[in-house]
Image 1: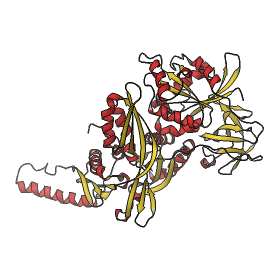
Image 2 (image 1 turned 135 degrees about the vertical axis):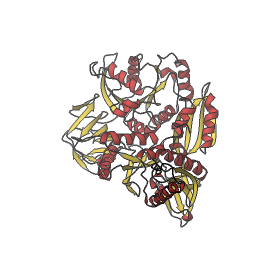
Image 3 (image 1 turned 120 degrees about the horizontal axis):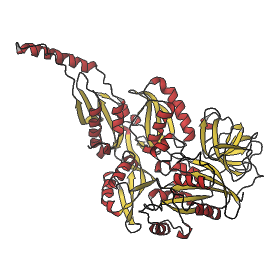
Image 4 (image 1 turned 180 degrees about the vertical axis):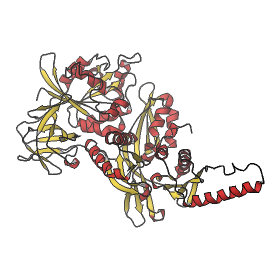
Length: 601
C-alpha cells in the first residue's frame, strides 16, 4: 500500500484539468502514442462537443519515480461546472490528495475556492498547480501570491506547468509521490468498499466503480450492499488503464471496478458500502452527502407510445447520475411524462440532450421551476415543485422560496453592472471585497428562482466572460408568490404555468406571450395568447388570422356582393374559433425556455 497514491484533479471550469490528465497519461506511458487522442478521459460525445467534463473518470497508472521505485497512481478527473459539483464530492471521497489547478491568466475563481473547501473538509493533501504558463498573458508570480493570500496554501509547494506542452508534468508527478500520503487500510480485515460511481453496460449489467478501504475484493466472493441488503456474486474485478482491464483482485487502498450481474439501477446506490456477505464488517463507511435537486422541469415524450421508453431511459441515466431525481406525472395538454429534479440549468440541458441522443427520444420540456414550501391556513406544510399542484391562494397562509448565498469573482471594472443585475434579481445584503489588485469578490443573497432562469448567461455576458459564479444553500424565506397561467385561445396550457414573485409576473407574462406569438403558426381564426393570475389577465398578444381572398373571382360589379362574401367568411371563422383547437409546436415551448439574451428583445 505504501506504493499507491490516490488523487483527484479539481479546478474551476476551463482551467485545464482534462488536458493535464492527458499529459499525465502520456508521461506515465499508460497510453501508447498510437492509441493516444486528446481528451482521453472525456468519453461522452457531449463532453467532446462542448469541451467540458460532465462525468468523473478514473484511471490507474504505473509510474517509475526518479529513485527507481515503481508506484501505482490512481487518478480521478472531475468536472468544473457548478452544476456538476456533486461529481467532485464523490471523486474526492475515494482519494487521499487533490491537485488544485489554477489558470495562470485568470487566477483564483469561484469554483476554485468551492472545490478547495470540499477537499479541506475531507482532510486531503492539496498540491496547487499553476497551469497555462505557456500563454503570453500568463502571470505566474501574481497567481502564486493569490494562492498564498486567498487560499492560504504555501506558494513554495505550487508547481508551474503547461498542460498543453507538457512542461512541468515530471516535476508534478514527483510532488504527487512526495506530498500525497499512501492509503490507510488492512488487507486481512473484513471488506469495506465505497461505491463512488456506476456505469451501465447493456451486456454485463452495472459496472460499479469502487475504492477499497479495507479487505480484499475478488471474483467468486459474495458481496452485500449495505443499504439495500441485497447480495451478489462477483464475476470480475479490474482497473481502468484507461480502458477496463481485469485483475485477479482489488486490495485495500486500490481504486477499480467490479461486475456482479447487477441488473436493477437501485441496487448500487452511490456513496454506499460494499461488504463481504460471509464476513461482515462492524460498521459501514460514512459515504458522502447526497446531491439535492434544486431545479425542476417536466419531460414529456412527443408520442405517447414512447412513455415507457422514456421511463427506462431515465432509470439508466439515474444509474450514472446520482443527482437526477424523477417521478411520474400527467398533463392535460401533453399527456403522461416525468417530473425531473436537476442541480441546475446546464445539468437539465445535458440530461435532456443525452435522452434525445442516446435513447433516440423526442421530448417536450417545460419551463424550469424550484421547490417552494407552502403553509396552509390549517397548519399543514406542503412542498410544491410543479406549478399545476399549487393550492388555491385563498387556502394559503404563507409561501416560502429557497435562497442561496452567491459568490461572484470578477475584475473590479464590472462591479457596477453585476451589482445592478443582482439587485434586479431581488438580491439582498450585497458585500464586496478586493482580492488582489484589480479583482473583487461580490457576495449576495439571491432567490434561487431568479438564478435558474438565465442569471449565469447574463453574468457571463455583462462580465465579458471574466465573471465566475458559485453558490451555497441558505434555506427558505417567506415571499409573495403567484401562479402565472398562460391561456391560448381561452384554454390553460398547464405545461407553461410557472410560479414566480408577484413583482416579476407582468414582465414575464408579456415576454412569454410575445415569444408564443412569434412561434405559433397562424390559423384560419384569431388566436388570443394571454397571461393570467387567477381570473385577472395581465398580458395579451394576438396571432392574426390567415385570410383567404374570397372576393378574388368578383371582377367589378356591386360592392354589396363582396360584402356578402366577407360577412359569410366572418361567420365561418367565428364558428371555427369556437370549436377550433390550436396546435402549439414544440419550438414554441422551447422558445419560452430560451434566455432573454438569446434575442435582441
